[in-house]
Length: 294
Length: 294
Image 1 (cartoon, rainbow over the protein chains, first blue to last red):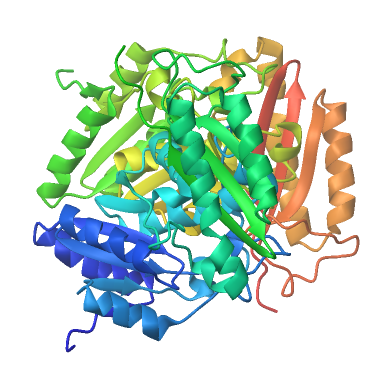
Image 2 (spheres, rainbow over the protein chains, first blue to last red):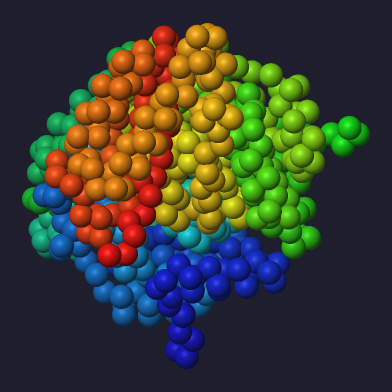
């Protein structure tokens, strides 16, 4: 491999490169990451490369989205490995800013997105989404891309970002990309590295459970029953369930229904789950297949 | 007068005009206003015209920065008069968006700037600065100007906006412009129109008071004494004082000093006042003249 993706660390150098691209009539896509890249991230880069002439991948482990008790210090970091993976894909530019450039010592601005940030991950991680919204706003305004790509694995995050971008009129098109899974169905995540061998062997049950719930709901089983069954099943498999919920896929409004689903009247539904195996928190989500016309 | 400044109301039309300007290599300055334009606003437009090739003036009475008990419904509005004044200055573009374009019914994003928004006007108007920060961020991202001009009459607002722009990396240069005053010293404000004839004759006392305080502090009088004297004097003149404070002009940190000022050790100081005459709230501020070298 001879191609090495160039790395910039300052906003000035970043904007110099991007301005040059725009002056040459090129389009730009951004893939924001926290590094520790896996196949899921790389699928986002490949999608970015299909969408735009040039792709920027940012690597920044954002302290503002970690709570004090969370894993900021131990979050996996390996810039050399990340650079190699991105160079292999011939990524045009890597933007890896140091922390002090992103957050001045008297940094004081916070973006919050109400409503859509509540519930699901917003309940167990109260400052998470404002930390994400703020850093993503910064990255979008630093890079000023035409497109920015986010994975559907963090579906609520994707919705929060879409809403923020619409509300603040940030001139960018946000693109959601499907979840990439291991051969056994486990959603890819940098945090999967925390799992012990035994936990790793149990982890795919999370996806199996929500997948079968989605199929059953699509076939007319009551949502409430399926949620109860799902929780029972995950507990039996050794998970500590943080949440298991059905939500409107478009605005994350909770779906209350104990009876059978009247499919033609309901919005697009998605099942969302977060559960611990030991100390590792896994999240996943899946769409309920569309109702057939009746 | 034959020249009429064109008015656009949609983001699409706005961006079409601005993109055309940028494609022709022109620079752009924005003057955000809530209309009811007076000489103070017009001085901002003239400054904008000196700074950039093309000037956009936005007119939008922003509901998000009014509290329920405040004067949103009675705030003076006269678009025809505003257009005439701006046409007279040959303003290149007026952007007057309708409320529903600025705030979708499910609008949910809020920008808050901590620290610098607290105290002074932030205490008596708790959601004011997040309302201002959010709408200014939107306007900056809609217009994408090279420069944006704000008056120093709303000095805390100017500081909040500077901080937000730095923190979020909004690619614009914020320019503060000096306060424009009536012949008798009263700071120009759209809200001066609320004053009765008798209140109007008292109103210049606010400026007189803070001006003499600033002179006395510069001459070495203790800040604490001057603040006490100022409050007493304003009350005697019929004002209900909301606040009267000395702050660091660069970061609005409170200045605690009961003794004489050691001028060479102190930062740039500014005196800030808000006071009611009847139901009308007036604000003003003035710099303490710089210490002479000793």
